[in-house]
Length: 252
Image (cartoon, rainbow, N blue to C red):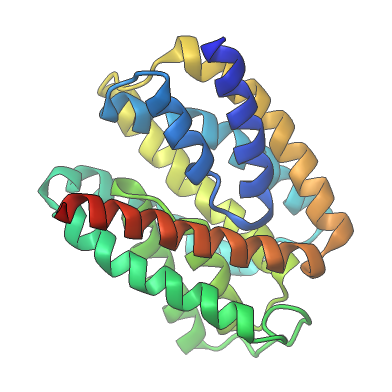
């Protein structure tokens, strides 16, 4: 029964994550409810999430929504950032970081909610050296962040790409998924060599994550920004609520 429930959670998480990010809000609590230790939860979740993000990345790239000219700059620095992030994970005050992320994600969610035009239509901006440098900085920082913490990475990537290059949500989601996959697989490798993955749970959940990602990506490509934006806003606000509850519980 545990595996059945985990597979269901993995399917839903991958479906949501392939559209607008935030799938970890569903999958991580499910792994905790299965009774796994914290580091095993993070490692096993990275395993299933990586399988889902690989599936959605391939599908988005085949659809032509990925921007390979920009990704060639972003991918190496996302990888470097993730390596550094996992390496220094135990040296970071996670509670302080959680409070900072709470404010940032809440601002993104509220701003997106009230900005009717944000990401709804493509308003491509000229690719300048400055924007490339900002993209590299975005990739490095969010790769680092995803390496040791993770929640909201997809939301930050999508928001950053929309602001930097004027993408609409479908194209932003496509490029964010590819960058997120790079940080996921980098983190996964480091979790794997430290033996922090429960494959008896991870493999069946990964199979359902692949199915969820395929369905979610097809849904996003078909419906476009009109369906991605409300899911993006919802997941951003839910993540803020989760982090707020965690902060309150720590204070209590």
